[in-house]
Length: 311
Image (cartoon, rainbow, N blue to C red):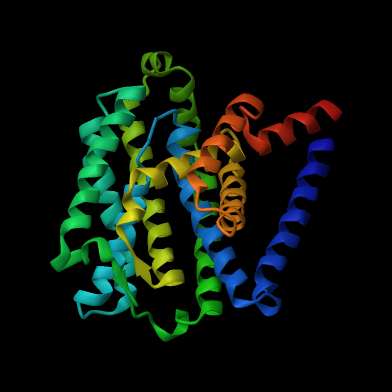
């Protein structure tokens, strides 16, 4: 009975949160509408990483490369193909899937830290290609002023588009985690040897998880094009991957909504800190140490632990 009550309470609070998200643009200035859009798509990106990190136990240290690949593929498809811009929003995630498949096949034989380090090396190769290929990607200048369909060209319409796609993507990822595949993935995380012994193909499940995470990272990259109308090489750089990783750890990497909370905290904190100093990376490092020592399960994990003790 208590579980039913708590579930109803969660649904009510979730419904209230959705109403607030949908009415935000009616009252907030343009900058805050943009900021919330960035929080939404970054939360989607962090949640996609957590599929392989928190639930799969895979050390994916260069997740940003799939985010940037999706964004660049979308922007280049819109600018250079001459086809309908909507096709770019399909091509972006598919390019990320292809890249995650290739990198996954190459790295999947390695384990733990070696997987992450080799992935950083491959991701850095992708970054340097984008950074230096001026005739195609714009090099270090990036691509600015990406033309969008009129229906999503305004800040408000871009926000609603981002909100709807993010909610749909989060719902699908939640269903994946709660599926038998998600249960098998968590079993692999906890004990890969035992999972192999009971007939689970560990490498195949891990590769599929990498592809799923890459797909939703590509969606987040496409949404960034909608919100910001630009792409730039730093979207594929390893420092952004570190920031996404910290979002998962800060929010709670064993909680489904933890990365979304971590993304909101990091982006709001970065926006605030940047008005006073340019040493954001220093603040990020201090925050990382704080999480490791005092919040090993993240903010959401800490809250859930306190609530369970009270009950």
